[in-house]
Length: 77
Image (cartoon, rainbow, N blue to C red; front, side, top):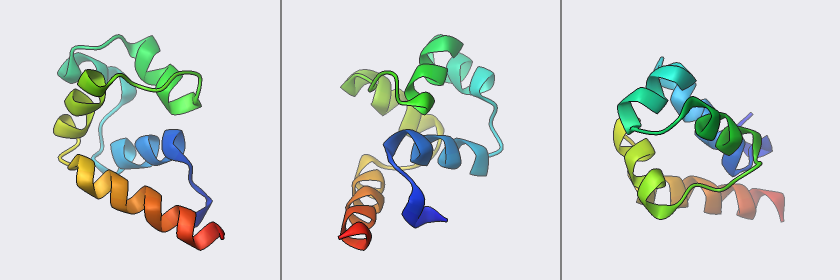
């Protein structure tokens, strides 16, 4: 369920909905596969530049991500 997601999980769900593997996303975004894995596991947060490359490849705007995350926060309170 969407309301059970945090930022790392949301990034993974968005990637999977696009039918893109973590490896392919890393290649398309110019990032290492291990970095994508660390983002999706919550070990690291992406830099603004990396975030921009990722959401561009996933065809999701940063505004949409922000909206989804704020909706999750509202649902949890």
